[in-house]
Amino acid sequence: MNQQLQTMINNMPDKTGKSLADWQKLLVQSGLEKHGEIMKLLKGEHGVSHGFANTISILFREQQAGGPPAEDDLVAAQYAKKAHFFPIYKDLIGRIEQLGPDVTVAPKKTYVSLVRGKQFAIIKPSTMKRMDIGINLKGEAATVRLENDTVFSGMCSHRVQVTDADDVDDELMAWIKHAYEKA
Image (cartoon, one colour):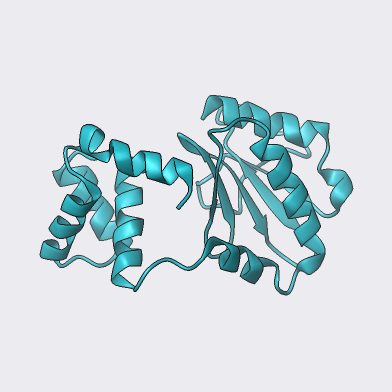
């Protein structure tokens, strides 16, 4: 388990009034299974913040399914047919982790979420020819390169297309750093 997630679990009783085990017992009793239903219950009826509700729901659903897939397996699956993008991914992760010790790299099924308190960026190998870097820079004006997001369904405000290693430049890293600082 990554350090950020463990810290969140450790802080859960103080921030939400219950431990993860207590929330999981409550969810078992509720009979709810879908992420949206669980989020509605936690946020609406129990006043849990979005970040904690999301974490509780994800961990509960993973537990019910027999446990989470290994993070390395999720990343490997994303790049199995797009291996030419894997070195770019590794370079990006290396640079982003240097932003600070509080960066959490959280692989999902089709993308990797980058979190510092809240999600500040996403890396996704979208097609055979393009990776999309989602960046949370609400209020920042779009440019030719820093486009308004149309890929991440509201999870990010902007996106930058990456087609080769040269696209991972100082400009992209400055946008990511700015989003990290705002997170």
